[in-house]
Each structure stands twice: as structure tokens, then as C-alpha cells.
Image 1 (cartoon, one colour):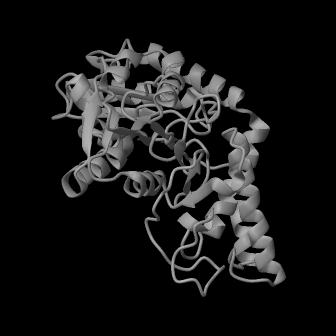
Image 2: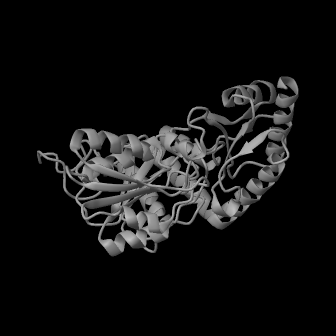
Image 3: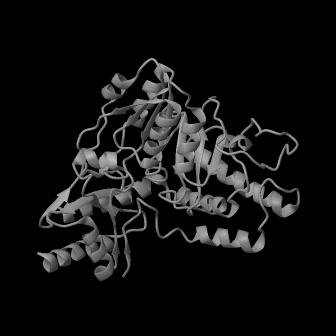
Length: 383
């Protein structure tokens, strides 16, 4: 039995409706969106718009036209940060950010002269709202926070941070890579101005899909310019959404696949999805705690995390553990820094890294049992 426990990187398997809808579009339609007035092109337009509507509904956003499609959450974050920040702007961010945020900010610091303040977090990955407030300066233009750490799983107080940003008149950007599709997100109630998300994680869609919800009136300069299918005689990128931030031929098949995944999520219900993943988390944590030499990190509380469990075994290299599990037990986990070295600094593993279990909706108790059996086999063979 192959056991996939790397859902924090990308979810697998996908609901069958996802490849079915992609296949149907590629085989029976194939028309591009926004590029023609013939029937199949218009049908493709409608399918793309339906996905925008489903995303707007999921995130409690009022205007589907300002749900922008990108290739990934990384592109969405870069689009926002590069499109908004100017020389002299100050940005407040967390100590848990993925390199999709951190590398972009550091590049803008070097090349554009922005300033960055990192809000501290405790060893559990918890950020205190008072520390966020203390980091704000007169020149603060933007707060950018991950909704949940991809290393520790810790859920951040997004609603409180959003209200603070709103009260101060500061833009608030949220990286929802680990939470969209498993935690409820309400851009209105949580005062989120800009929400970056990816399609291939808990939204259960295909790779190469993502987006940005623009819930404010800020001017965002396009990351790229080019064809949009409309106003072709105009020499500059259109200033209306979504065309303003969507240039080039769209990933229509991927967007249709994402729409199918959203249809599945609506039918299952986020509450049911969260309940199942929490139960699996609790089962896994209880089983892991009795493994000899185990080192667990993060809150170790399913109510405070998404489906991520980082761990090490004393005296062993994470990559060796992951390789053994894969080759001998057909259990797939992640090992390393997970593109977020700042989070590893909090827990003292920046030189070593960790093993990471990523639990998803399609995992079962038997998968956790296979992991535990594999870890016992590794210890027996290597101690």
C-alpha cells in the first residue's frame, strides 16, 4: 500500500471529478477563454467565470471579477508585493514566512529600498497581537502574514491582525497556501485586503493554479503585460479587473479542474473536512509520542494547527528517515527546511531540518499506522 503523507506540499489524490472535468474540456472543447466569440470559447469563458464565483463564495468575497487567476500562490504574492510596494515603504511580517514571501521582500529591500520588520513568535509558532502592534511604524504600508505555518502548522490570529491593520489604515495581505480549503476564510469579517491562495493544496485542484482576491481599492501594478483578448488596440495593460492583472493565455484546463475541486469541497463541507483532518492529527500525535527518541515540534494540538506534524528522531538525519520510509515502507513524507528557514530558526532546526507529515482529507487511520510501523522498523534497523 502506497501511503502519501506530503499533503502540505500538494494534495494527493485529487477528487475524481477534477481529472474528469479537465479531460472533458481538453477532449471536447479546447477553446481558450477571452479570445473568441464562437460557442466553445464562450463556453470556456463561462467555466472560468464559474470558478471565480465559487472562489468568491468560498472566501466571502463580493466581486468575482476581482478574483485574479495566477499560476501559484508564489506568483500571487510576488504580484502583490512587487505591484504595491514603493521605495521607503515599511512592511511588517511574521517569523514563519515561506520563501515565497521572504525572498520577495528581501529582494525588494535590496532593489527598491523597502524596510522590513519581523514580528517574533514563540517556539510553538504563535504570534502575539501586541507584538504585531508594536512593530507598526508611521511608514508601514503593508502587513503580510501566513495564515498557518507550513513547518509547524500553527494557525495565526488572522482576524485580530486584520482588525489591527484596518484600524491603522494599513493593507493586509494573507498567504492562505496551507489553509484555503480546510479553514473557513472570510475576507470581510477578517479584514483581509489581499488573499493569496494556491489551487493544488487543500483546495484539491491541479498544480499550476492559484489566485489573488483583491478586496480593496489599492493600485496594483501588473507583474506582466500582454494580451487579454479585449481592447487590443490599447497600448497599455487595461486598468479594469480581472484583465489588469491577467495577461496571456489562461490555464483554462487547470482553472476548470480547480472549479471541479471547489464543487467537491462544497459538497463535502469545510467543517467535515476539518473534523476528519483533526481526528487524524490527534491519532497521529498520540501514536508518535511513544516512538523512542522522537522530537516533536509545534503546538501538538489539532485545534491550533492545520494538518502538519514536524518531527525528528534523535541521532538521525531527516533525509535518511524519509528515504527509508519511502524505499522500504512505501510511506511518503517530506524532509528538509520546507522552503521556510525562518520557522526552523524558531525551533532550532535550521541546520538540520525536520521530517514533516502532511495530513490530508483522503488519508485514513491505516496510513498513520503504516507510518508508525515504518518508524519502528527504521529504529530497529539503525539503532
